[in-house]
Length: 367
Image (cartoon, rainbow, N blue to C red):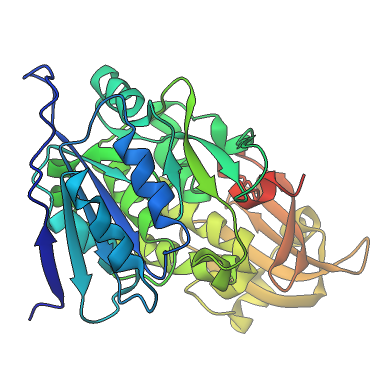
């Protein structure tokens, strides 16, 4: 059953000459009640130094005049407007948009964000240099005042062999990414997820062999606003859905370890699929407890995890506050955290690739 109606502009793909050996590129724009922003988004596409071959805007049952505003751009852009007859959410809108594209490459743009004029050219040049998953360098904007460079930890990419493990620790790929349509189809496209549908896709693209790279300069304008879709979620809890799904689908020991450490850093032992095992408590060696810094009488969670070793949670013997620790089977301290109630501070992590960076694009403007 179809949940959308499609209108395609009379303007075909751009007539601007381009090398015939370069892949075609299309832009997808999910929009829901985006009338205050959509003209800026589409205007930024119209200004590109490398014109796009197709742009698909998916209106996800807006209650405002988003559709009317989009339709006005049909004489300027090679635009397809898809109107969902049932609200599908961001994952469904993105997937619906890509279904309507017939280009080699997919470039994402949210309805409240914008491209700088050289964005598509810079992203395609980066893809030509290293075909894979291209993450833009972002600028943040509140809608007034200057753009703020997104200079934060995620601006630095890990080495290719470490990219998937660190991507499990944190999503360092910016939403306005570019990737191959063929690889997107190969990994199954967007899946139904309440929050983090793009992170779920990035993980599967990188697991399938895509290398993440970036253009040299910032070119994607990320609008920060309190009423955005992402602002409606408790981030730590919401991200466990993506991680839990990845954990269920992988048998790689290194990746399973990375996922579980990522879950612990978000929601503590509540995020692990295995429950507290009270029968395991008597078997915890005194040396393990000493490494964890948690007294036997103060344990509230203990489990011998097949991927991690001993996972312990309880009262810190030094401070009396809550603490969580992972001790490998050979006695190594793997992870130690203090705090609780989804507010955890990592005081030690054996592998720094697994340390979660809690900053986000929103945090850039709070500094």
